[in-house]
Picture 1: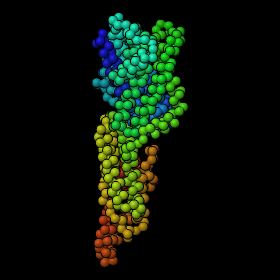
Picture 2 (picture 1 turned 90 degrees about the vertical axis):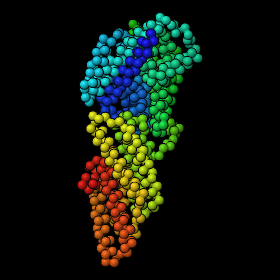
Picture 3 (picture 1 turned 135 degrees about the vertical axis):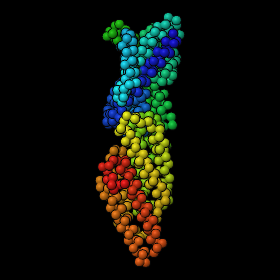
Picture 4 (picture 1 turned 180 degrees about the vertical axis):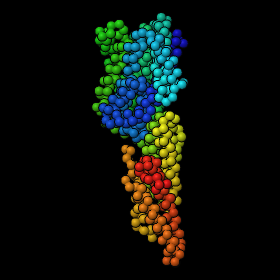
Length: 525
């Protein structure tokens, strides 16, 4: 009996894991693009959460991806909370699949061949075919696990009568809720916990109201994954996790109040499905109390998100606030987080460089900025080293390499800021203005969208380098004929050399962050 129960749960969890992994790999970067396009408002974010969770069959996967997206700045906190709300409704689809298909008849005759075919595709296929095989094998394992669970539960119901140990009072209900939450925490899957409850109910091991209380606990327990993902993560991740916890606790209170009506729901289901209404009633109850939570929370999602944001203020440096280790396993999201962080670092360097050139800030400010950006770049390096890139994705590979180039050039710019040369008093005003404008090319790239630096940037950098070349020739000529003080001349030449090196790295930074259409490769070498 115990072997069947443990084996059934294990097979179900393994199947869910493989199904989720396969579908995520199959979607690839399209999943990131879909979420960012579908999250323009609370309703669209909610629908994205429902749809993606229903397809992927894992609210935990949707939650972890959402935390990564909001940390990377791809979506707002309001959109993230909307997705979380939708994911909670979408995950109730598992109960319907189990109650309408898994418990009605044995599907092992079909499921086992699916596992075999899926494993074959995984072993011998490549790219999307391999991902499809993983998902197919996972789908088959889910139903093999349900069959195994049913055998174990049937044996359990003949040996133990669990119903006589539990009453219907509030203490007993809260105890069952705690057990349900513990099941989700131990199994690390609310879907597996719900499937176990439904098979126990179908076997007669537990009663209808007991199953309802367990499902309430399992719905609350699913927040643990989000809480774990938020440990040590960014403020945005913690805010999203807190919103998830508060929403599930709110729906849990609603469900407890609605628990006495479960018998009425069962009678209504009995009319539509007279053969086996109990499991379907629990699936309907699970969906109903989550739907009521949606109706309450979704219209208030914006003020609710703002309130959660005030509860957890930002504590990390703004330059590295997008870097969240929880998303390093999702390549496209991690790459985008690194890119936007690099854009923030570039903007900081550009802003300070321009103000120092204009003599609005001194060398001390340049040194402070250089030290801050060096620390931020070290954090980016560690983040990128931990990022997992799909070897079959050429797009991800190219974007990752471009980020690595940008890190290298920004590091050189930070070093140059650290040894900032004194701006000569005799510096030509045209050079001063043009050089400041070149630094500002990095500052104009600091935007939330994927916009590019000002047009004509290659012309700006090319013209400034021409001016510096002419100025260098003029300084040398004046020094040779005794028209200029040699000590001042060499200081002037040092500044020109420093500025020319800065221009090179400014140009290449913009090139790798925003593509070859921004700065001509022959100019920004």
